[in-house]
Length: 165
Length: 165
Image (tube, rainbow over all chains, first blue to last red):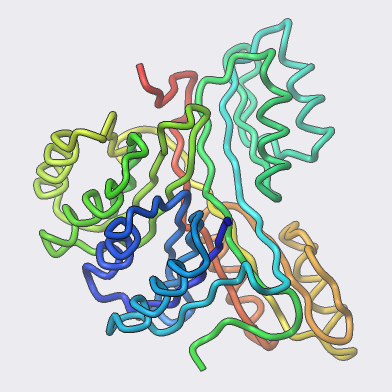
């Protein structure tokens, strides 16, 4: 089963190594990961996607909670939540393909970040992973120079937050 | 100096632990990090932001290149490039604040992801880190329930890509 885990950690150094190490020690691959600062400069928030057995994930969560810099852990896969990520793609653009690429972007409301018409186009799209995947597929006829995506952020629906207290 | 480093790695397990470990071993904090799959399912791409001495970063880059699963490393801070990230914020919404929050969102073209008018609003904004920071500041008068951001993705400008070959 796919698990999306959100973690609040103190910005001590080495914390990322230790968190990632708990997964790799059990042979669990981290499919995607985000780490970035929060409003409190001493605290970072991670969103981590992995696949695996419920029981093993439970064990990893317990071990995460035992790490001193870990403040809070939640497997939001069990909650009503949403996941969104961001994609950037750079495509080769030529007189013959430029307008078609822009039209595809407009269809899904991708943002045109750069449009060097006779050379390349950079597009940005946000949404659920499957929407991003479908968009990438729709670009198959064109020359994709480069793509990069953030991996999902996860947030519970509803008025409750995932915060320090 | 702030460095934005992009890395292509084979999806062997433990690779994240090893990459992160090279930074923590030198006492370098990873300010933000993204890891997500690429078009080639066996390869992931990371974008990592850290601050430090040019010489030390050069050494870390060399060590990264020596790790078997690391395919390519680039410090794009030295290149003409752009960085964009995604932010999600959940705000408390009440009859007295709802319209003002929506107006602030429209001003910066943030997307309204959920609008439970009498309870909470979830907004999404993409762009450079300073734009996201400024938006968060502009929300100070309202009750921020939760925020999460991806950390930046980095991409060179120009037609050249950052790919396997």
